[in-house]
Length: 233
Image (cartoon, rainbow, N blue to C red; front, side, top):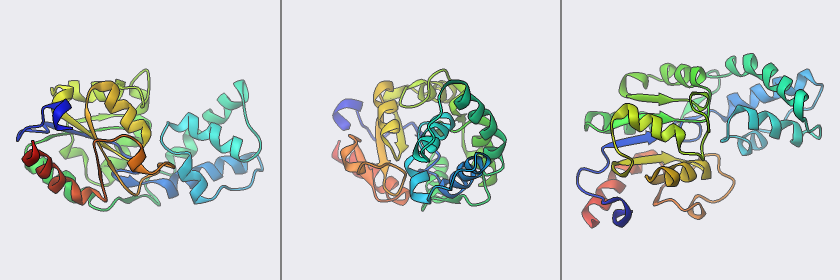
């Protein structure tokens, strides 16, 4: 990472966090929402493990994957209707079962106090994202919050990262993406950013195989790991 990004003692000037699977464990709520939607079509519920495997590419892709896994794939108008039906259900399942990922509060607070500009870029809808972040007390520490419906193309496209960095007034080469999945790596690479992945998220592929610059066991390891990178550089 140091060679490509010019890592220095001032790096990073900004950190952009993913939300689901990175700052919060929202899989139980998302799974509950999916199962409520499936029940309206008299389909059996999915397991938590199945729901986790479908997270990361936005609500529309989640709905599509859920019906396919249930043996009733939807297309065209039927899929669009299911997405419309999902919207109010999803909003009812944002913070009931969702919990913080290990070290999330401490790590965000650490970098906020250190003067690093902080943001969130997620494929979760904007209003839902703000509600979750407000519920867990993050909003006052974030200079940019970008949901999946705030941009034309969701991660792994770089749009949400570019918008977050524009709001933070930081160049991509001076920023770090922290996430848990291939979508985060893809978005960071497309934006010209360094990227760190954290174990324990929702990727179905081992994080070591996703091409990140660094992998941490938890967010608690991020400050120390970045110190090591600066010293090595």
